[in-house]
Length: 372
Image (cartoon, rainbow, N blue to C red; front, side, top):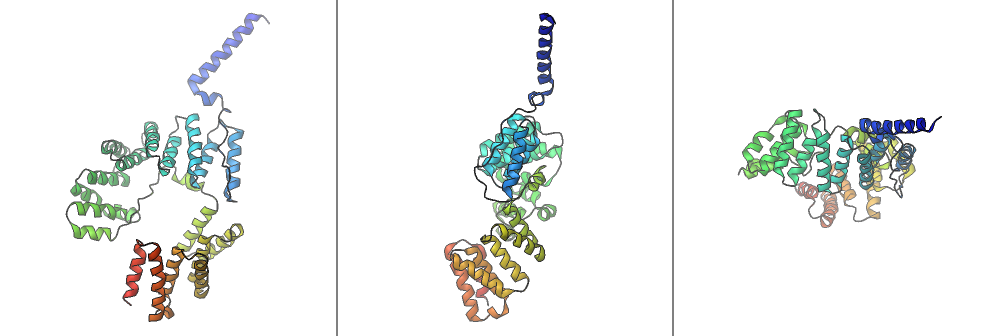
């Protein structure tokens, strides 16, 4: 073969590479290039650890692929390991800068870490990449802009969200909040005094906003009424990837959450099975020991529940959560309604109030006991 033919083939190969990069992008052509997985130094959770290891191994096996790296980031995010999630998502957006999911998840964990300016910049990038019908990056960014008093930016993005998905709950809440911040409580009340919003948005959040709006409008009676049904929480708004993140929540923390859910739904047998399994991993966890006592109470085993609560308090005399649970259980048991027993329940709650003077729940419980 002549030297000229070799040179022609070499140039043809180089041109083909350049064309591939131009047409398909660098990560497509070099599929196996990319940084190794972000790994934690220590993970004590025996359920979470092997899941992280497997996803990290998958990343290292094919570092130029997107799926395993996103799975790893979502696992860190679901476990509340925000710094590791942020580092993983930063790798993702470096490799795949045109994917809106990477910028959105990065923004969410940055905001949770208090890196508000970084979060806003990341979410701005997500809004630039969002499709014609994807409203979530816009309304989420609007909420954050309201929080930092950038009402112009908030209005801009909530208007875009409204064009993509008109009159959504997020759009209405943002419009109500903007009206409040702009000193227009009448408009805020008009927007927020909406039964659909009140019913659909959890934790009395709409009443919280209405309480502010009525007060700003000079109607103290309606403000007090609204605040009486409000909470101090903000909703956790679901975005297009919330369920995917939830599907990556694994480990002992996830098991604790599932036990709580089963108890709330009065599925005590299912809760018991999970508690027994949990204790094979971590037998001294105080949260699960409280849940175990709560199951005894639900099953009518009041004596066992009282004993378990008392044992927890003897181990930690500042355990105000268990003290409140013990007091509330005593308030439900007829034999503890004599003046002497009520005095003991009051004493338990008074100790909690000494530890936490602003505990409104305890003040309400003490007020109830005082009426007996």
